[in-house]
Length: 384
Ligand SMILES: Cc1cc2nc3c(=O)[nH]c(=O)nc-3n(C[C@H](O)[C@H](O)[C@H](O)COP(=O)(O)OP(=O)(O)OC[C@H]3O[C@@H](n4cnc5c(N)ncnc54)[C@H](O)[C@@H]3O)c2cc1C
Image 1 (tube, rainbow, N blue to C red):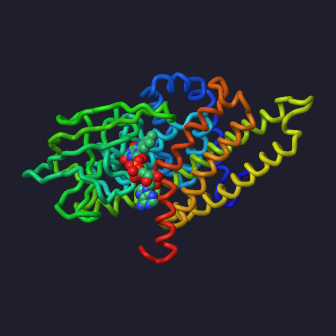
Image 2 (spheres, rainbow, N blue to C red):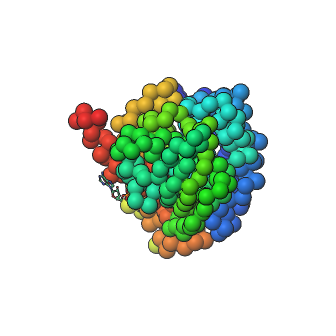
């Protein structure tokens, strides 16, 4: 029965298909990907073949022409693979690096970068963060300077998901001497261009099935046709992109919280102490009730904001609220689930420890909890 009024029977069918795909083609292999620090490229191609990388992209771009809730379904269901890294890498591909190409890209850019990404032939990444500028996007220092028909790019990008082996990057760079949000532009840069190096593959607490890189751009020559959107308007373009990034992070957080809750609920009914299932202790059953209630509250809030976003509105205060609430929800649900698993929860042979490690990132990536609060506060007092 579809979750009305947001989902239809079509969405339910999609959910079943993705859930089966996760069970048979991701879950059996995800431990190995975590071990290797990355997922294999063939799974990207497989997802392209299945249409999962372009669910809400137009048919003429190789997509499925679905609505925004098809992207929500994908995000929620991928979270059930039990690892955060792989779904995050896919979200970078489908909901972070490529939406600006659909919205602001030229026909050449869509043919060259967007369509191959939807088909799973190209792996994308997005470069906003720098070693000295994370939350303060307007402070970025990577520079692109015009040289005849080309741009020359110089700078460093930090924590780039998919960055060790992506085919291209949606890059944020400064194109004028203006400071702050003025004079920032976006570029699509092929990562095999001369002058680009992966200076480090970073080791992380969690999210290990996705690779994270520091990238150096040293006098990288890029043709003018690679400028994405309007010169000098990159800050607004990337702020728009970040809204979608936060929405999809919220959907993934709901999926992860739901999965962690189900694992804890089932474990609590099977695990016996003092001669009875631990779920029979009210402190445990009520904890599960609280987890389910908080998940449901956040789910409904996420869906209603996603509905507005899918219709073209950009309610940034509510998107920030949803991002903040679901990031905290996922982490707290994972933490309580680990508690219910007891010592087993702390062991690698049980699934909770990884979820617990991975959900910690939700409160940092795509804008930290504190930054979400700043945005919400500024909007509350009308300072935007
Ligand atoms: C695993 C991983 C993957 C990532 N993938 C990508 C990617 O693909 N592409 C990309 O561009 N970035 C990526 N990031 C970067 C991520 O978006 C940033 O880490 C995040 O935006 C925070 O920036 P920062 O780490 O520089 O922290 P900082 O901005 O240095 O913040 C440090 C602390 O100060 C607080 N703080 C900062 N400013 C304020 C303020 N105004 N008010 C109150 N508190 C404040 C923060 O909340 C935080 O607690 C990734 C990060 C990680 C860890």
